[in-house]
Image 1 (cartoon, one colour):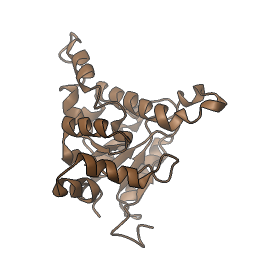
Image 2 (image 1 turned 60 degrees about the vertical axis):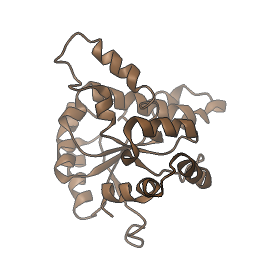
Image 3 (image 1 turned 45 degrees about the vertical axis):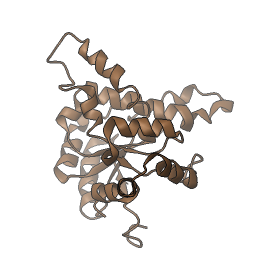
Length: 228
């Protein structure tokens, strides 16, 4: 698809993170032979964090190659708690909740002090942007100045990128105020059940009045991140 429509699509590669040595080889293949624009990451691997020591060489290589990563849940232990009639809560509640928890854990264990690749977080970052003050205050309560993270929590959030998917204009407006227009890329949830293109576009148009700012969200920032 990317080769047929290079001005419209940027392809991402998946890594076999359960096999770190193979994942390291695949990073080079994604950036080299396949010439893709970045990588897609799960929020965890079989319940383990992306900051597991055996994965450090993989993410060191992602740093070296300057690849952008998009992070999205791929199933987790929270999903396993749902009954047959509750599966709709998986994309509505559990995916954003898992994203919030796992990215916060990565910040707190120093992962983003060790790595600086660009990261785009799905579902408008879950609740991260809305909990920024609360989580930041909690870090200040830790009586150990040398403990990670090494800087205020909100500063990490200001270094990430986010898609615009929330389907709630006040939430989008608050998120934009927290980290700024330049940290957002347009999202639709396509091809999943929540996909609603007209609403996604309408939310951005309603919340972002300036045409130049809308162009950043709708196109320019993503093109810069994924080099297409």
